[in-house]
Length: 210
Image 1 (cartoon, rainbow, N blue to C red):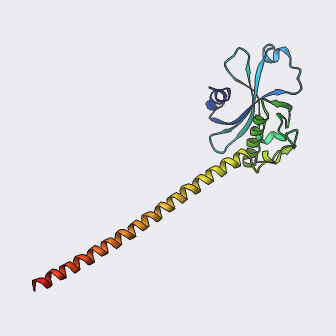
Image 2 (tube, rainbow, N blue to C red):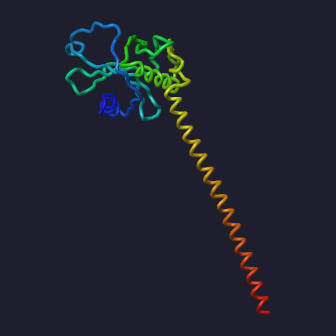
């Protein structure tokens, strides 16, 4: 099981939530954290996760999850609602890069994702989710490539693929219906011909008897 699948199963599923996306990150600038804040210093992995509740009305959260070295479990460290998100900074609107910033009402973090691709997927899904679920003013997305905010995004591509598949299936059903219609017409014509033949044969038989 991948780390992200394990996070969803261990952290979100027990609370009747579904993880939409997660990105593994490291800070671009080190924060001074008191020794006792984490129960001791040590290496750890950090994930920024986006989740939504299964029950309506839906509530969306952005959660910082950590896994400390030597531990198999994951733990929530910080959590914000999507309405507390004020700005998403993609850091470079002209190229793929792994850096991005998140600004909340009470926090600001500068991150580096494990890869530019991971960062792009996270921002695409985060932007789509904000457009759908933000009940107050939507967060500002700055210095993000246009493809991350629409156009050729993963979500649009997926929707296009589904639409294309539906269209192909519909076309196939229509073609099948046309073939069935033609077959029924031919069957009707053959039936009429057979009936006419039977009538003609009967008339001939009666004529010869006379």
